[in-house]
Length: 151
Image 1 (cartoon, rainbow, N blue to C red):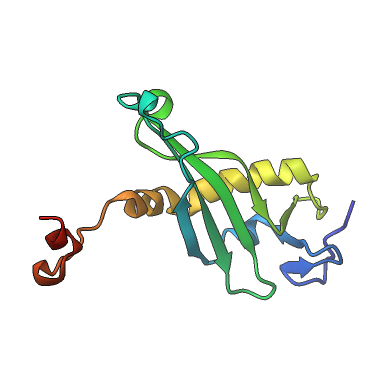
Image 2: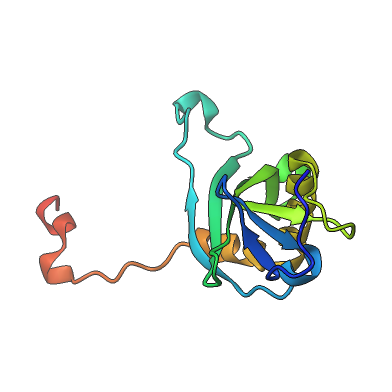
């Protein structure tokens, strides 16, 4: 296990590219939204018309700290299972390895599980997903609309 040195910075970049971060320090990091997007429908055939929709996508967040922290994960909206709120699918993808109270890096899977819980609690990602989903009205110039050629 890697020890989080007593005299080290609150975040420490290690040789494998991971950044060791204590939970109290992580809670102070101002993450910024980078991108949220929808996954492409795998089956949009007519046989699925009228069925409950499952919407999936991903979101990515980063910090402007040194070293940079990045966290991303997949999400789903499945009204049959969870209502209209998006929920995180699986563990995040990240360069963060959390450090426990004992000053040692948590095992990778334990770190990912705790990091996912922290991101769910700290970031407004579900509101970001909902804002992304809302269709924006398309301003049309009737004089130059491609639909004019159809009529």
